[in-house]
Length: 79
Image (cartoon, rainbow, N blue to C red; front, top):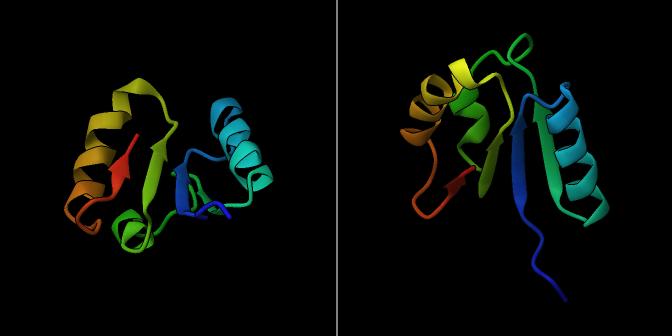
């Protein structure tokens, strides 16, 4: 049996984010899709995530990664 992960996709409403969400759900992972217009506190959302995919415009990636990095548990990934 494969290990299922808790995954957050930031930018889940976009073309790339939506494709990532669909693939991960199809693979059986627990996926939380958030978008910048409906995410109240990204760091709180990502606290329990094992993996966070950032699928937003390139100008926002560094800002979002910094916010998430401080909140995520050790050993988690930001992609």
